[in-house]
Image (cartoon, rainbow, N blue to C red; front, side, top):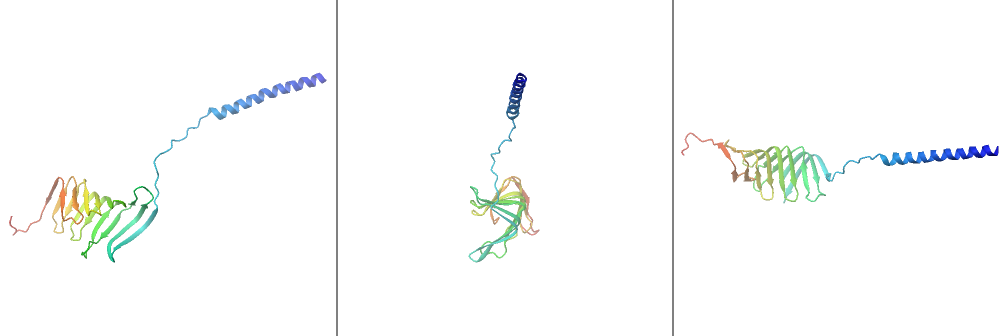
Length: 199
């Protein structure tokens, strides 16, 4: 019987060894045979607003007098980036007051961006500027340099005076923000004249 017990133990040891080896090989194959592809890492920075204002009405004052009244449903300020800026994703309406003027000028756009460093406004979609005299400018895109007091665009623009005169510039314009002086590119228009006016 001792021989039989020894024989059984030898067979058990032999049976265990192949099972153990097979188990280790299958675990190794399972772990290292399947490569899970990782999604590519995006190198694009995602910027989040530093401050968000909802239904904002901001009044700016300079030396005790109102210089501007800005209204917007949503304002997002990004101040922690290299060039800080403010986005008006849902549009803006801005009344701006020139010194010595009682009636404000007006700036409106469906979307706008203000660069805090350069003082440059960019308006897109239904952009309208009305000066204190009532002359207006309309375009789909317009840049307003607040520091230099100029406006410009390369898009089609319409100038309409308070008297009803109209000019269209197919390739844009450069103008002062009070619309006193301007240069139109590829322009056309009409002017109302009195019957008694001589040429």
